[in-house]
Image: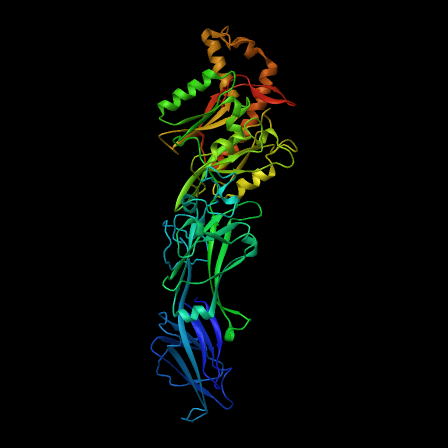
Length: 588
């Protein structure tokens, strides 16, 4: 239904008003009728379309009905199909009649000026702003959905800047502009109308701290771009240029979706009418566009690597060399974080998680910094944040636990679960579930991940482990069949079965951990005879089996999609389980 505005008429003097292209005016024919009038006749100039709504019947004029009874209250609607060339170049005339009289007892004349006012964005997600018949004020997900997308401008295109690009109200480079979404205001019609009315671009109060809008007028020089909307600036008066029908604004996101922010922001343009140019203004038309802030998306380890990060510490020279050789074979750039930067903190996968943000016009990686904050605390900002490489972080005011390290954060490959598709996979995080109490991921991190929506998180039980990370008992590898991957699960049961097979084959006296210093070297027979170790691994297996069932339900997996990897754990109920030998996490 077209946007409507009710207009009063007068038989005492001609009136005038503005009709915005694509909207309807509802003329108050009954309210302006002179005493004794029983019917009316409406006639418009060629650029005016008229309809009469009477008793749930719609008739387009002109019609065979010359006059319309004023009771029981017909409604006269008016629309125009092209912007006017001059002020008041179209009109409509209403003639009123008494019963059985051919002489009008009064006339109301309304002069009309049609203008175009349209606020547009990349609603159809083509990568460019274009006109569309889609509903700009709504937003839907999916390849067949519609709605504009906004990126959080969280990279740092200017090497001399101290913080993220969206932490100041300046446009520092053209690359900075490319991270922003365009918002185009189109205006056409007689210039005198826009000089006598006011165009107001405005943002909802609740959204003002989520976006920032820049405008450079008719120029493209960086110094001309000014912060016009967002923060404390809730409205901006737009003055269309004499020869320019389009005003291009640039919009940047300031915040990712989170627990109190669903990610939707609305921008509006309102045409305000000021009677006789007085101080009082009234709105006569509003157009709106809804943006959704693009979520942070986590990438599964089954995808082709783009860059490898590794920490160099005092005792892992061989490991770094091996990773470098592997990266070279994969033709993948290697970034080594040296000891002065990592401060002997080797666990980079615990400090950060790599993902990306994507809009039709731009995609760039974004590193998610955990609340862990150990030796690598400053590395993401100092060495990763940069041009087209963004940064986001969440803190844990209640105090970070081991479960807040991002070894406890994984994501599955794409899956379909009971007919519902997760084309970007589902995030997996470990918690104390189903145990009462225990450690859980910080609320700020958990809320952030849930709010991104597209990778609906699944909580697993990982608090049975001493460190408590899901990557200690699961991983994913590519596969050529079935779902395109396999889930690898640590399995004490499979390990005991393997050891028993080797014992039966005569290898019972084979010692474990040969070549390692300062560690016991039990034989297979000794391991199988260790009743305390067996009982503890029965417990570990039960915890993994619980997670196995959750993963099957939540990822739509069947048993052939899972591979059991032999593994043993040691520990106790109080301290938690640790791997008996190097497990799903590579030892540096």
